[in-house]
Image (cartoon, rainbow, N blue to C red; front, top):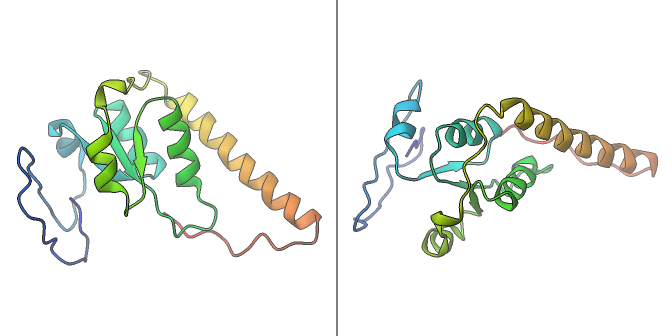
Length: 146
């Protein structure tokens, strides 16, 4: 678990689960390879890295984002049975109820398709913003970077 400058988590022992934490690492590739399950934020790069490593993935969406591209990406990848997604408050329930046997491997070498999908999502946001502007509405402040 990468905690950055946050507080050291006060996690109790969970039978059958080892939780490790660290502040920062230059690469988490080795951690991903060794993991039986990865819980991550829903950034596109993180999703792609874990899915290409063929590891089960649960992504936690950032509900604070204005244009929640993380949610759209997570919804689509869950609909395609490649991962599960959750909010922070529902993570425990998601972990209890998920069936990893339902997950389908992300197609190998599908990076271009993934980028194309992201472009479509981005274009969709652009269309929504333009629609707001065309109607004299403010689309809101720029989205925070994830």
